[in-house]
Figure 1 (tube, rainbow, N blue to C red):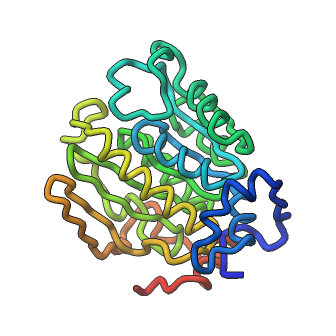
Figure 2: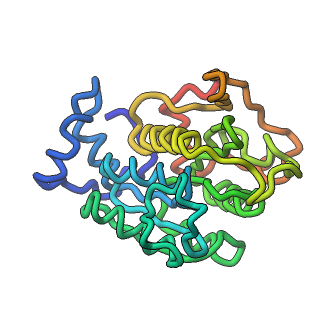
Length: 277
């Protein structure tokens, strides 16, 4: 089949009749085969932040038939979260978001396994969160946690999807360690204007980005179609403008400048896609 990032020797699970019926329409996509679907079921994704971006990505990964997701998000639900966090319910205000997130996914697709951590992403727990993961979704509202996740993904050779929004604007790019720029290449310094709770949010804008993140994750995990590589996608929903910008690796990047092409998953990806585009 066309490629994926899973090791060749990993066991590819069979799908039960309910899973086959659930994904029947997406297997009508040209060249999207049962093998692609099995690869998706065999995959595990870390969702670092299940707010407007990560929660939306989680829903669409679940309905697409991913096998397992790990949710990492600290804190209880507040009413101000409800304009964008679609995994949540009003009667859950004051309670742990990851617990409700797990409940919602299980109601939508009980065949998806969900592991939860009511924790921020930190140096102390990031290796635990990434254990057994094939892709990471970076969706926390601060640079500190995003950088920790980026650094760990680069170190372990795990692809990461980076996206963020502010008001009506958003950006997205994929980090394939050893092949594409990492977060530090593109943002070597934090944006002082981007404070965790200091930027405006229209829920539909964060939802749009979450959908795009799930699409890119599915492509990378299964090898179906071509993911966004060495490019940054920017959009302004106010004028409905979408642009792509070339993304470059920094020769002096302290995170990825010395990274060799030794990771098996990175080697597989480099054979599948044209990274010079």
